[in-house]
Length: 122
Length: 211
Image 1 (tube, rainbow over the protein chains, first blue to last red):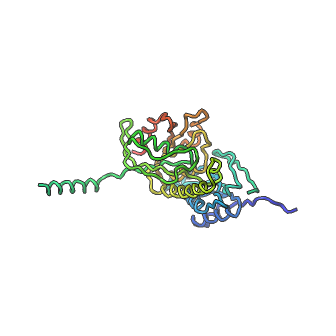
Image 2: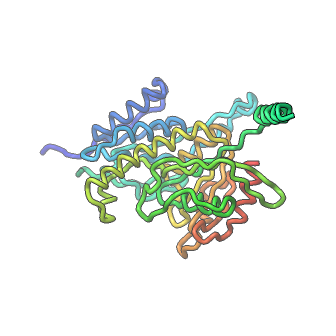
Image 3: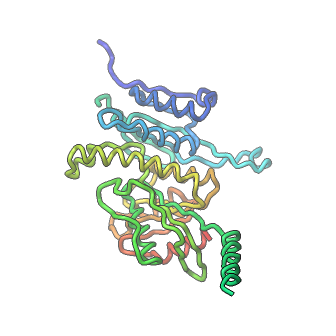
């Protein structure tokens, strides 16, 4: 029997780090539009999240793509000793889940848990 | 004599323009139906006597950003003049079927959806042109929405001041303390923009944070 379901790709921090911000956003949106759920190990920066929202809006089509469901934990300030010594303000991004809005629905979310429902039926 | 008076006036205007401090631009952000335009209307009615825009229980009523310049707010001995930008509700998805559930015809719902997507893009673009944000959250809803997380993250990354307005405290199911617990690093004022509840405290915080 052929197994049916939704493809879920878990993307490592290293794979995302190789891409420029614009490539990351394009990669995510292309994968999600093809129906995949992505779990990003280290998520996106706030600016990249804003770009992703912007690009999503340009691609919404009333007869097809209705947008994305994205859930990430609130980012944290880098509190490493090096960061403090260099007084450099960096943000630690955290795990993020992205998928098509008609197949991924967030049930509950708090500071440390994201609970979501996946649907194979569009 | 008239020439000299006119010269003096022009000279004075030139220097006023040259050294005039730019008003801080404050964006009112939040998810659809959080009460952003209701708050913008409340602020403008209290300090200028008019309103910003229409409100509706159907999401995405505001689909273009509206700017009102030179709104002077006085509170607690502070006075601050702001340019206030009421932005369309931020969202990651827009489905025209949701508008049809409110009785809209398909064509009208699709048009509203199209305008709403353009509004979201406009709101995102405004993030690069602000000096601070009032983030309006619906205190009856889960505060950890992606829109809230993204707006807060963007303000923190830009090191710009952010004030959270936990709105709709006139509703019995509201829980502003949940919002305070979710984002304890930012100042929060619990308000009802609709009824004006606690609005003076919000003005005090606006004068303090954006002054």
